Length: 260
Image 1: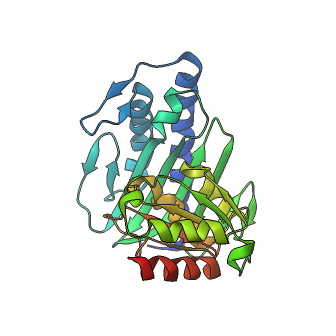
Image 2: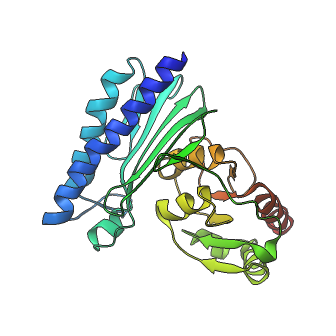
């Protein structure tokens, strides 16, 4: 794709996120009924209508690209250009009236994540990034912190239920003891903070690619490292995250690997 096509794709992703935000804010004000999907996770009309709004923008913007969405599945194939869409990541927060939910839109090109938009309309924050063009927040380029030592690092823990039964659980405990600060911001929030220099490490063991694809691009383009807990690059089958400043990520990966 040409530079103009990448620019057009980013504009479309941001426009799609804005369209989803209109839907989400509407239902945030009036409230929604909640259904439980087959995987025991909640879904609402806001999730479905937000994804429809996103698809309506993305489909004509990049002809030939497939779309894989949380609510309506895969339209097309997984090769080539593939939009990855979670219209309302954090539905549990949405239905419990807490603002830690977002719209996640990413573009994958031949297996590589190249573009990401993360929009949290009620929280009031949007970040975006494109391969080679940096990560951006409120018109300014975002950059991870330069933290080098674990005893100066701020950590945030997200979904780690499966990690509690993993041999690496004790290694995580040691990381927490050796760090400067531990928090659990979760969802989009701790990745935004990482990309903006407010955190140094994020750990999650229970995610899917739609949750974190856009965030992976944003953290990477802000100068951070973003892998799974085994140090592998993010792909469509990724289920865990180890993201951080380059130095802290490397130290955490080494510790976790020794315990695996």
